[in-house]
Amino acid sequence: MGGMPKLWDETIEAHRRSVQDATLATTARLVAERGLRGVTMSEIAEQTGIGRATLYKYFPDVETILAVWHQRQIGQHLSDLGEVRDRTQGPEKKLEAVLTAFAHIQRERVRHHHAQPHGSEMAVLLHTDDQVTQAQHELHRLIGELITDAAAGDTIRDDISPEELTGYCIHALEAAGHAPSEAAVSRLVALTLSGMRPEV
Image (tube, rainbow, N blue to C red):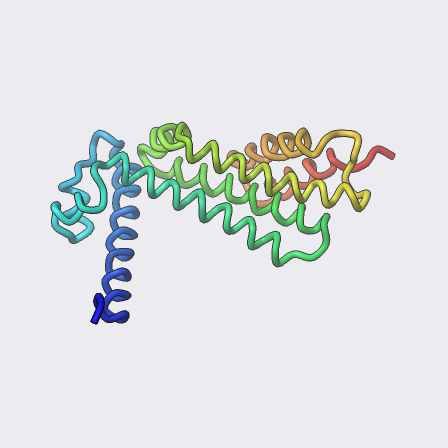
């Protein structure tokens, strides 16, 4: 006899995921609108449409909900960059495509935070945790591997280590967060790539 039927089990799991997804989205929106101190668990439960006791089964406090939401955002960005890499052919094209995608992510992230009354406060709060450090390591690894592959094909200079070039790329393209247009982002990516070309 053992356990619940598989379909029932999957239905419960799907419900759990939908509750968590709604909770994360609601919390992120409220904190961006009102600031961390302006949001309570009761309000999150009410706006998510669940009981407060149910909410506490999933999360102990607002900070934890926000941290989980941020972890998902980071994971999604890294996943998106991996997909861009995998669907692009050729070492140099892969590098250009991933750097372009990264620059656009930076621009959208900053625009989103600035569009919310407490977006800047939320950005500072979220970018001080261990998840960000780990994500930076993953980002460095991803871009570093692409630079190494492109350098092997003589399209990227090899007189500077891939580690240094990776740091250069990431710091240069973080400026895309304040780019005034999509065209400005494209120019910044082109400038960043030109700085890595072999000297003639």
